[in-house]
Image (cartoon, rainbow, N blue to C red; front, side, top):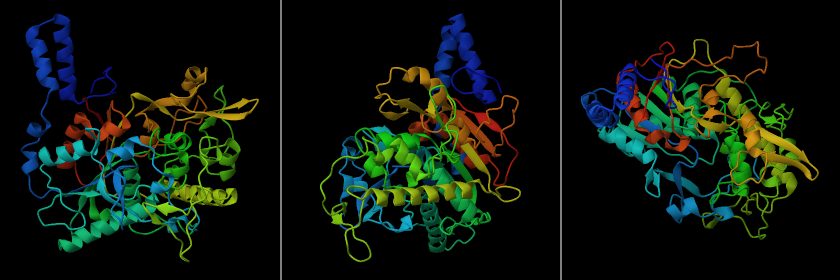
Length: 498
């Protein structure tokens, strides 16, 4: 392994040698060397793996998307609420994607939307579509319908309602796996999981707890690795194992032209993407930590976050709540309350319940059994893009201002403050979160930080959303799928190029 200065910390021996040859050719201005460099950079992933792709007896693969990664439609009218181009560029109506918020436990808040397909591309830019194309054309996988599997199918997509609780989505994954095994009459079948972003948390929950809900009773549950018997490998791509402050930023600013803070407020999953360490991510303009709990609803109300701030409370008519074109009702047939028009106390009750379940999820995923995972876990990600990790709370005469690295924010000192706000990552997930590193203690003499052990770790220079489409990622993914052992291996770090 050698160091390089292209955004990746390490390269494989073959790629490193190619990089050195290219540099030498440029310095010598040799046409032959330059043409060789061009040929090297345009490697053909399908050609590299064509023999391995024909091998029999490989595990079928299941691809799991992340937040906003599945298309949603109304189960009754079939009307699309998320999945058309217009959904990605135009702000939705409040009730198109909002969930009800008046039931406890919050997993009982349901509407008529269902996931029906993975989101492959937007405006011609492929992300999950590029990954699926590579798995089919270069990997030789044949994708089928996860709900109606055929014996010849070797690839599936698990799509789920990304608004909902991550534990609930993981239980759904387990049921889908059992359904495939039952319909194919193959009880010994094992699957390789390729999961992006939040989908990695879904996969890890299933690996550790199977189809058991360990979040609802307030008790600590032992890690059983109940899902391990059905898995061969777990591959996590840009997964926020320790959460991401990008979730808090999104809940305050919304998606610029799609979802408002009011809509995002109703989604349990986005709270579960918050950093798992409740303290240490809020600082003053000098970088001094502020003692405040991210998982306390009063912190949100006090600081005017999400729907409690001026950007999150838009005036809306007092109309019956609807969902995807149909009224959403509670068990008694009454219209279910959503964030729009809901009383402040009801919003606070929902918020605290969502935060409590998010805290429980993080605690469950931090737990482990003696000896660690019986299934190898491989991690892919990026560390070349400044990524939000701390938010600045600035005291002003009119009150506390929460400062994100938001390009639309009008703060003259924002650029200076970014030095305390940003750390290496992929623009959404920090490298520390990807590697599940403990937060730094702040003591310069403490050089030890606890970290999980993975079978391998790969770093590329890529943005979070385009990690699945990165050619270097896809190339190394096939080496993991085709050649890595289906048992825990010593920690190794590999870094590929582009």
